[in-house]
Length: 198
Image (tube, rainbow, N blue to C red; front, top):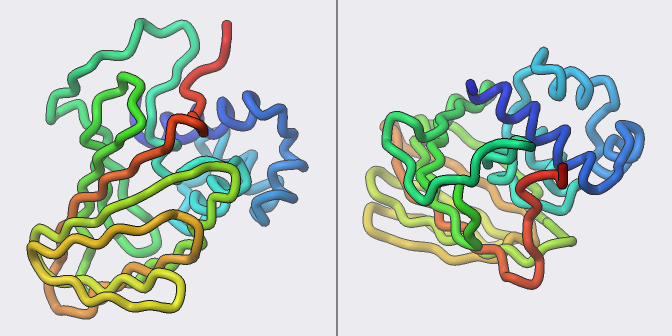
């Protein structure tokens, strides 16, 4: 399954699990009904900012759109080979996101990001219906991360911890790409649905 089909499937699934109509999700997320419909049909490539709005409207982390969750599929594997790890590129900024974690259910998810030189992505990231924590470990390059009103300048080897309850701005102020690892943890009291009941 390609990454755009995966996003479309997960969006429909997460919306169905919550019983939201297109209109209800549009109202909760601020994304138009027609745009949501196009994404669900695989006819539109959403940006990170749009996916972030949809995630907030659904009460999940943005990472949920890259999970496996196909009804009727075999039980998810506890291992994922490098060649099978889903890769997605933000059409607006060009940043590349690789999901490293296997599809087996876990409160922890690992993601690798390559963030282009000079680019900036602003996410609301205020997921009010879930308790989600994130750490960013910079492997190469430099990044400015603004969490709420505080800006942190990260260099290779630095790690920043945050809770996803306030806006976050990712900015690469340098002339070369940055690469970092993201670890996301959802507390057990607020599980993220991974599949519909058959």
